[in-house]
Image (tube, rainbow, N blue to C red; front, side, top):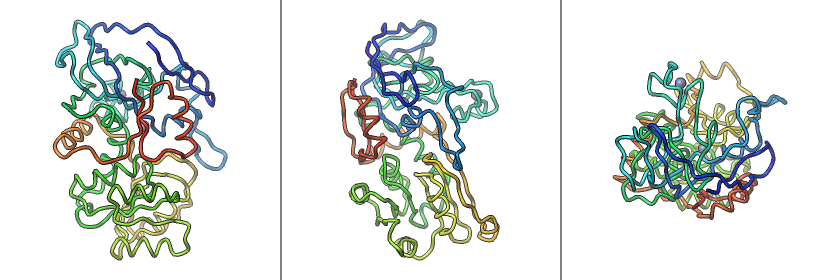
Length: 349
Ligand SMILES: [Zn+2]
Ligand SMILES: [Zn+2]
């Protein structure tokens, strides 16, 4: 089978020809129909996160290369190991990439996405930029019925990440519009999921005019260009006078600082984006405004099941999905890195 692998940090993806894996034990072989290209693949390619002030969090000592990227995979079950039970041949599934050790405290609580020794597909083990993907156990498959696997693949990471982050705002979603910073793949899905969750809607802050346009098309209440001098006043007005919830899907020093300074008393900032940098935090503002600053990282396997149930009932969020052949994996990753992608690219092996 063909797959696309990271062979060195900062280097392009290399095509590799490998034997089609044979499932043993509880393993399941899935023929990949859709493999989403996610911004964290760009970080993996770069080999580090920027922690601000010259500090970097490197992947070099934590990841083994070569690695087949791809953690947003969907496809069809085509072979079962002898002990793989609970899933049928031909099932149309998402592959939950968030596999933990099953032994640490986080895993024991069902939070495999927060595992201290993760075995994530497309990160710590081979992922879905391939014709087939070997899944260790049927528990990591979520059936999606007759949903299009190409359009549904991004639910595994961008959908789940946004869903879990939105849930952290609780009842506020139904009381007040949310400020959403960034209208990349996550931002557009957030707008759709917010509707599914009965939310009041999103006011989107985004630099790129094309992405602002896409946000309006996805159903944003308004969009704000953060470079205009009265951006914060515009944001406050569009939210109805007070800023109580900010979802930061960019996660740069500038966006997080802006959020803290703009939030009103009792406000909540949920940071999801991993753009990088350091935050200039005026510490007294945190107690004085009784702020909550919370990080959100992916979501749990149970939340993915909840999300799939929600989407099967209410439909996929209307995020633009660009389908590209698997052979364009490297080019797709480059385009995402250079900010050329509106919505989501999904590779179709
Ligand atoms: Zn991702
Ligand atoms: Zn664990």
